[in-house]
Length: 129
Image 1 (cartoon, rainbow, N blue to C red):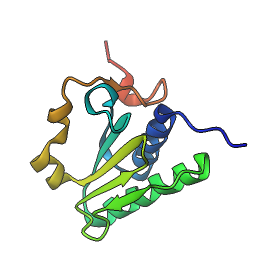
Image 2: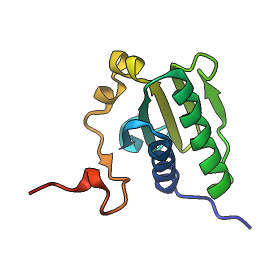
Image 3: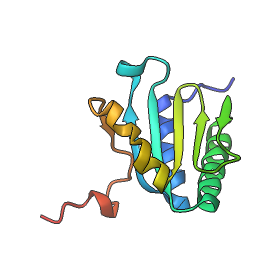
């Protein structure tokens, strides 16, 4: 019997897959208390449509290989401007950078806590104090 993965584990794996493929400004937001239909959003940017596709595929591959999870639905893959991957417990948004700047969906969830997803010692975690 396969155990059901924790939503946070899925979200962190998706964030790390996006980061490893070259996505930028990757954030994980705990939206469970404010949204109710899923636990976490993963939001990231890609600089061009080819990278949007590559990041989307990397996330799908990672969650399938590591957790046996496939998205329930995928929206926007043809346009490669804003791809939404619905994994039920988490929703991943892969934006072309211009679309993310335009829609700024993070501001809708500014009261929701962000989740630290980077491994300890990651360069973006060092404070430089």
